Length: 352
Image 1 (cartoon, one colour):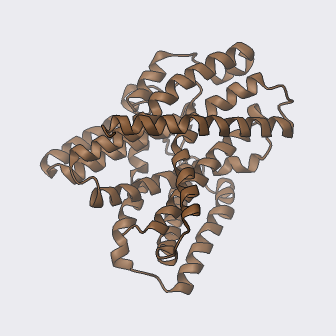
Image 2 (cartoon, helix red, strand yellow):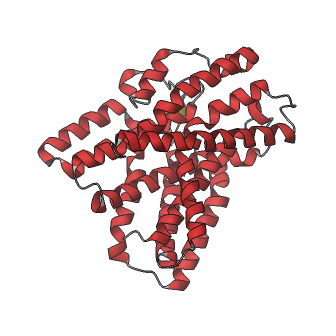
């Protein structure tokens, strides 16, 4: 059961994770000179949070709203494309403007130039599919698009498992995972942690209040303290196993991903019992819902916008004024495009 108060909490957490990704990228040396560099260590953890939340929400919607394959696919595709079809042209525009002002900056960012293949592969969410040997392709400077390839795959796998007979679904899932590659397959259980967490509420029920408070606080505390520590003490090469991801490509640190996913799942389990029946005022409800709606557009366009704003910035890149200027400007851009994305989503779903 997903109560109104707990749904609001999920929206708030989703928004904070998006802010974590955005400010983590803003803290990079080639954008702000490294101001707030500590936040950068949490960027991948924030994406892990997105995966767990996504699995949780999908479990809810297929049980309560999207009960047919048609309604499920329409909802998933409209959610993705209502933002992607706006983010991709904006990415191209930001990169064109930015590279005209600061070609040296973009020479490093766009190592392979403005390749059409990066945009086309992102449009169909196969930019991380290892069968194509893209080696970390991205649409221009929009590196965060790597996660949409993962998300899309998990949506399709879930659709097959839920709506299609196993005799057809299992071979299709195997084929999809073989094409997508070992990194998407290795992180799929993280997404399913969220899915099964929703299903588990009837099993675990409501934890005793003292235990729930302790679990909620301790789990977040370990994430906050443990993630930077884990980067230092845990092997970053997965004990010699390579799981490529992203536009470099990097080696995904699965140890930290699974540690963060388990801890965050424990946090959600505890918080579900603590706040599921709390009454929230209409004003706070409206504010949190609005922040939640900003999340996907923020995630999908913030980095190209940051690079372009850095290129045209009148401020010293290592100064606080430049940091504030970029942060506020990106925020205003996100606020401006979000209503367009929402109206586009409604149109894609065929609703008036």
